[in-house]
Image (cartoon, one colour):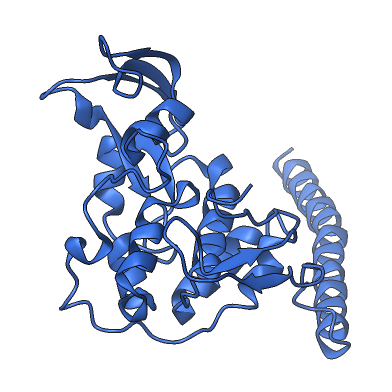
Length: 269
């Protein structure tokens, strides 16, 4: 009986080994095919895959003026526009001062309301105004783009900070990538351009600080393509450059959305 059991176990073990052999062979064959395919794609110039960014947008230099960008950016993809930007290392930011971009939240577009309230009015829902004021936003709801949550805004010493106005291209980053060479009027326009401003979650904005795309991206992934396209559009409109790591991060993000369009300055019709 023991001899029969031993024979049975030996036969079962042989069947198991025989069953695993084809599986191992199939896996090895698949790996070989994959390696050959990747090698052929690479040698033929088809790997890594590169998205078709389309033609570069038309760039038109504008005469210097307050409340205008330096460049009008025509329609096109953000990826194509990115290729028009100069790439080089960041300059020193040791001499950066917020005052170099003018007084915070001026009425840059001369509509009678300061820029902060312009952005709140644009980005909030269910907006209510302070009594006897056509400009001062008292409360509203924000479909917050960076976190994907809903944030309530209520004007007040202890509550206003829940919603902050973010410079999509942080002013500290702008200073280190070309804005230091702009005129005071051009920097003022950059700081107040609606293209470069978004109402966002206060803590997320503080976490971002003056980071670029290589050091900070919105936690909500669905906004990242638009966010990066907006940064590229701002940099093109004000002739700023991108650092190598910054550009690499932008390319990675836009690789998932190669047809993401660039945006015009908020000053332009």
